[in-house]
Amino acid sequence: MSREGDELALYDPKLLHELEFWRSPAKFNPPITAIAPGETWMKVRPLQEGDYDRGFLELLSQLTKVGNITKAQFLMKFAQMRASGGYYVTVIEDTRINRLIGSATLVLEHKFIHGCSVRGRLEDVVVNNTYRGKQLGKLIVVTVNLLAQHLGCYKMSLDCKDHLIPFYETLGYVLEPGNSNAMNIRFDGAKEAPTRDRSVTMSIAANATNPVDPS
Ligand SMILES: CC(C)(COP(=O)(O)OP(=O)(O)OC[C@H]1O[C@@H](n2cnc3c(N)ncnc32)[C@H](O)[C@@H]1OP(=O)(O)O)[C@@H](O)C(=O)NCCC(=O)NCCS
Image 1 (cartoon, helix red, strand yellow):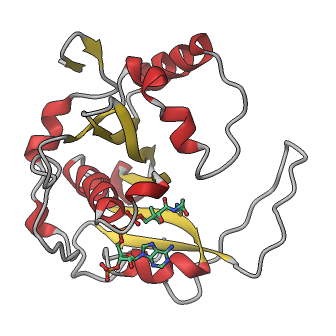
Image 2 (image 1 turned 30 degrees about the vertical axis):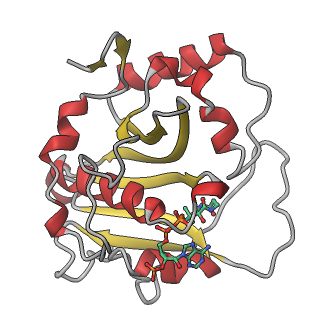
């Protein structure tokens, strides 16, 4: 059942109990997992329908422009994502203040190639700026990586700026030679802010000890 307490959750929270953190090349010091995140007041869980009132959009606004989204719009998008079944927005809550402090999304991309396989996409990774540097970025990314592996993805990819390459490398992502360029075509007229950072694509294989599939 994808419910957490009285609230509808985006996916079944039990999945988070099935993740094997020992599989990740990430080093946690002290050791933490999605189920035991190191503090009693911290909870890693799927996005819930009540999270509009727990600062989810304010958290995302530390990553990029969000816009003025009404609760009705949020609930509509939540219902669409939940019905599609391919969205695993995973959050960290500070339960002392009922606020979300971290988030990352796994999107499943279904394919015909590789024997009708599934590729994971890591999207919208953010930790509230007052909680950064405490392993929460690692924790939320490793959680969705393991979720992707658990759900049968053959690889997981992300786009990031140059300066975040070292962060993602510690979590098992690699730049594939000749196959790591992020390109976009804009339909919304928005222009990227000028930056010295280039955007690159990184991937992690289902079995991080195997070379990443080039496709
Ligand atoms: C990137 C981000 C999620 C990291 O969260 P965090 O909670 O501070 O990360 P952690 O505490 O788990 O840090 C893990 C490691 O990565 C390193 N790291 C963290 N942020 C980094 C950054 N911006 N650049 C380079 N390294 C970074 C840390 O030094 C740490 O190294 P260590 O394990 O050797 O000590 C956070 O800085 C953030 O939300 N940034 C704004 C949004 C953003 O850029 N998201 C990524 C989009 S691709």
